[in-house]
Image 1 (cartoon, rainbow, N blue to C red):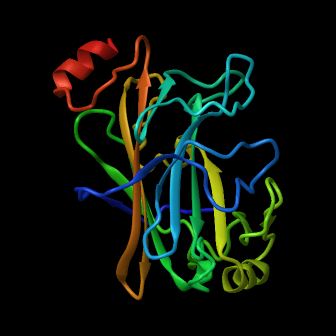
Image 2 (cartoon, rainbow, N blue to C red; image 1 turned 135 degrees about the vertical axis):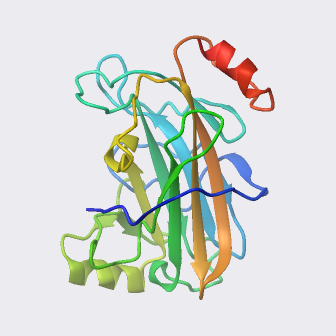
Length: 242
């Protein structure tokens, strides 16, 4: 359950991140989803993580294949996912929030506000759809995120089915996770899963309006050999894509 709250053009600051990481306590959504390959920020005792994943392989099934071929860079084949329709890509992105990763902060998920930015410009620029993926609003009084605490086992998160349960979870639990497809958020109406390029994704959290942690990844969509270094000029990257 979600609605897009804003469309913005944003320049991201340089941040220090950890790559190829497991997250705390584990991946708690769904079943059979492995930990690992997250790009994380573990600032101030919290943990934010993002990763890309193969959502639809050639048989139409999800895989624990994350294709993090460079730090914070995830590479996936262009095209519509097998057995899917419309603008559903072959890949998904997954995010995780732990507000008490060290067991020392005692913060709960509802103590913070959040900002998720999804870049819909596959070219050298960025054009973000930006919204809070967790905090309830009039448009989204509750979400079906998987939630838990530092003892929750793999795949054992709980999902709210109504507003009251969601609010209770925000007040009592310190972990929230979700797996989403880019096509669900195409407010610009421009997303084409067959187009090659680079998409930036970031996740931030705020305490009392002050930035607390921030993670950021890039998803490379390619139709041949993937590029290996984004420090190359866009012209070089584009030529490798074709």
